[in-house]
Length: 257
Length: 113
Image (cartoon, rainbow over all chains, first blue to last red; front, side, top):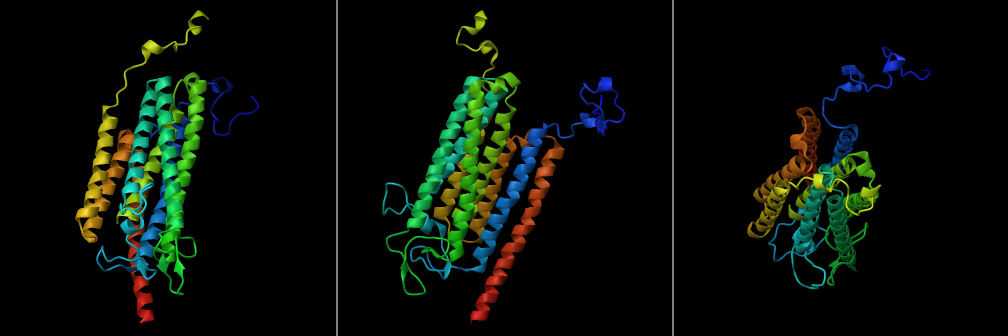
């Protein structure tokens, strides 16, 4: 054979077709995980660094600004101090003017946790080679994922639109809502970090939905059934749970603390 | 191809029953912890103690998602540590930069006064 691999100096042409089994020949699997799954784990680790950098920046910037020291009832928006999250995120779609602190974000959290459950059910069905169940649970996961992204779109538009009262800015004008340069809720960086952290997370959810739609089509076409395993669903599942995991941290550090 | 003329998949009889009890158990744990966090938002005054409780509960939730849903608990020790050690190093980044933020804020306040 003309194309002998340089790493296989001891192999004769007749053993080339055999799977590599030697310890230093690719036959040893110390992590007992497939290449694809291992690489997904390492990708998620690097992605976790990115999100950790975002949330650490949030912590740094929050402590760099003054904290509000008065009572919860007397709180008013001001660019002088960092806002209390349950005063910023207190509205619910269809319930205009009702003060419901963190209710909508609680609903979003539940939706995402539930989508994680339907995802793990799809993976479980894949282990049993149950094509119908895989399809069913993938569709539920796509539905909950799309609902979450829609909720986030509403949250963004409400955040950008702002309250009716607005906030008197330092230059004497009244400002409503938020953009990257100024916002009615507090220091400029509060809105910037909201847009970047929840936006980056929302992009991840959106990519996850794209992967799920693709894997639903592949499942329906019988691609995984012919392949003999549903490992691709498992790998996409790892990604999806990671997105849920990130939301758990965003939820705590952005909305609760 | 007589068996392909029916709409049923050929291996229908071989599909084992779903084993989902552990999934729902994990789900109720996650929902329970989230509900507990909401209770703490409204019954406790903001402060270091409340934030500590939130962070501990968050780590509990993260443990259940990673260990059960992402199946890391059932992987080899080598893989578990490969993921956990780099994440553990991030705790130092967080502590260092958050306290750095307090110092930067203090310096700015002192310069203004």
